[in-house]
Image (cartoon, rainbow, N blue to C red; front, side, top):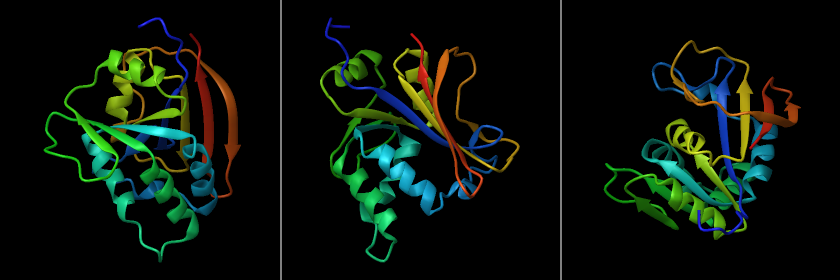
Length: 190
């Protein structure tokens, strides 16, 4: 680290099943679609984000927010505006090019590069996707975790947290939604 204090926080947010998966064994995640109340809550969390960090797969899912149509509900259009206004960094060795505005491609995740990004911004940075988040967690970069636990057990798929990484956490907040989703907000203890 270059001696400067970090200003921005690195935040990992995931929508999971009760058994801790972001998708099921077939790669599906339709069971995780948020209702209006959850979506509006997520919008308020995401409003703080200045930069999104993605792996290739998460970027491919999220780039659909570039072209949200006017027929969508206002809370969906609001999220699309939040997403489009933020910078995005995609870490991928296989993606040929990015197709969304305000997006740059990096070929490898480097912890020191993320530290510099955090030192140079005053807005939150969000790490998206369990594989990239695993690297950030292992490097000790993640400051906060938000998880939206859905009332469904899918029995397998991609886990939201990696094996082999120990992180002590402090529960900061919790919220239960009418559809059975529970939001948990933790801060890492360093």
